[in-house]
Length: 255
View 1: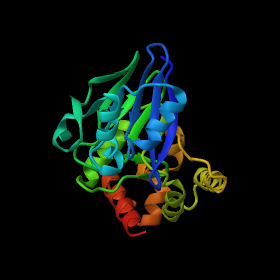
View 2 (view 1 turned 90 degrees about the vertical axis):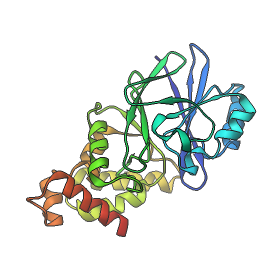
View 3 (view 1 turned 30 degrees about the vertical axis):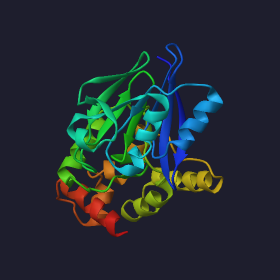
View 4 (view 1 turned 120 degrees about the vertical axis):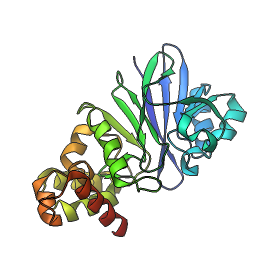
């Protein structure tokens, strides 16, 4: 099912995403940190907002919920595990359930680690993954409410998706993530090329999102704790994947 996806920059480095399914004429927004950019774009398109898809409770992903709901009468969808913390929640969902944007079906994936109730939405026909602060381009979210084992399990779920999955994450962090990634994976030519590409995109004022899951497999150190080169750099050749992942996350926290 065709699903038009538009990036809406928010705040200083957040991304919300405007989705439109043309056959049913349904429009949704993922993680609106602000209401004004959404309503302005909808007015330009002469469209009505039907749904808000929330990934997690943080204000930089939900602060626009109530104003948009008041202005448009839209419904708010979010995690049942976080029902008490999502503003305006109408429909509570959990892993394995489907969210419909018109005729486009999104699978709900539980991806805790950054927060305890974080979910992602996978629209398989559109090859679109909305993973907010679980997986970033060349990074992953801080472990604010979960631990390394939980986050690594969530990332492994995402790694089961196809290489051509388009990754729509919550922030424009890629340039700083690239600088860090090169400190733990300095001999990776795919990462070196990606870092150069990211620098060119940002210098031109362009987003680095979406990335693809295949590109992240080759370049994102948080998805590659089994890589021998990364393990040598960290001095952890005999460690488990989750131990290596935890060390990478701790180093990024101090970077």
